[in-house]
Image (cartoon, rainbow, N blue to C red):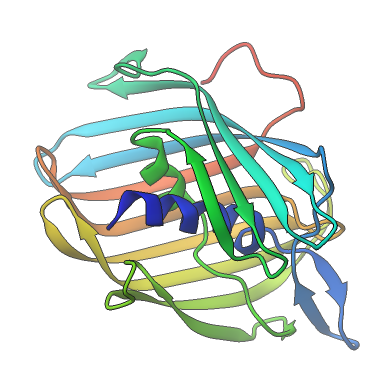
Length: 253
């Protein structure tokens, strides 16, 4: 898959697909859409565990700062993601990510939430961000237990795609693990993406918990199967994304 295309798609997910906010629509139907404010900042810690058929296990942990840089008069928006810190665990030993430097990706979206411009570099973290964020949001109000289906292209000409199903699983109360009342959303994506070793048929399953008042994601957990990449070969991936306190923590792990 073209990397720039994937990053724009990833940031689109963060800006309009990932966030699910809550406006009631009828007695038991809910509209899913994130609301944004200029200057708002969200911090997340992402944990990715990779286990290959060859028996190699790798764990990658990184923190990001995600900011609404600007809300324009015509409804357009500028959002940025900065990868602040990263480390990895290989064969039981924790180490810094090789060659890591903090990096920022900034994207501009039109009034309909479509990406129109992307700037910045983030290396392999572009793929990590794309992998760990849901692929689409429901374009109609949903009842609890109801599905919404769509297709998402994975290359520029649209010849490869993911078949996506979004399900409103339930309404979650505030708890020790959730800082606010939340929606629980399940997203399943099946299809073909382009990899370094050719086309790959993958399946992504994720569960997201997002605030009902403004749609900011609080936690995302999921798995990815079907990935093949040298030198790991076929690999299974599990991931977890958790919203962090406003101030950076002392330790990643």
